[in-house]
Length: 153
Image 1 (spheres, rainbow, N blue to C red):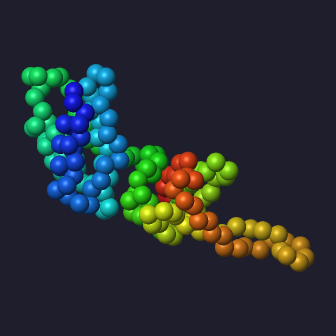
Image 2: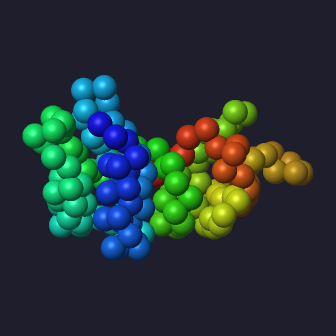
Image 3: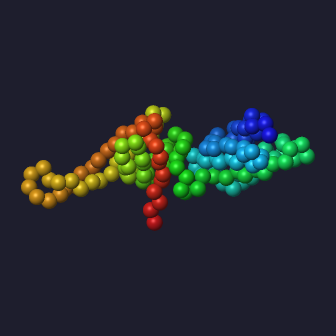
C-alpha cells in the first residue's frame, strides 16, 4: 500500500472543508488504514463518510486488499494539534509536563503557547487559615507531555 497516495487522498478530501484537520494517519502492515480527523466545530458523521468515500473510491481493492477506518478522536484522546487547543478554549484541561501536572481552564492558545487559569487555596501571608488565590500558568507546546479535556457532568 502506497502511504503517500493514500495520504494525498485524505488531504484532498480534507481540503474541501477547511474546518477539518488531520490528527492521525497510519497504515498497518496488514493494510489497515486508520484516519483520525477533528474539526473546529466538531465533525459530523457525513464528513467521515465523505472522506472515507474519497479514499475508498480512488483505491482498487482488486489490486491491494485493505480496510479503511475514518474516525474522530474520542474523549479520552489527548490533544495533539494546536487547533485542538484553540477549539477547547474555556474548557478545563489536565496537562502533564516533565515537572508537574496542572488542571485549569484553558483561557488562551496561540501558535506557541497555552495559558491555564485555576483557583488554589494557600496559607494566608499573615495569621492562620487559607485564602483562595487565582493562579495562571503559561506553557509552551514543547513543554506539554500530554493534555486532555476534563469532562464535567
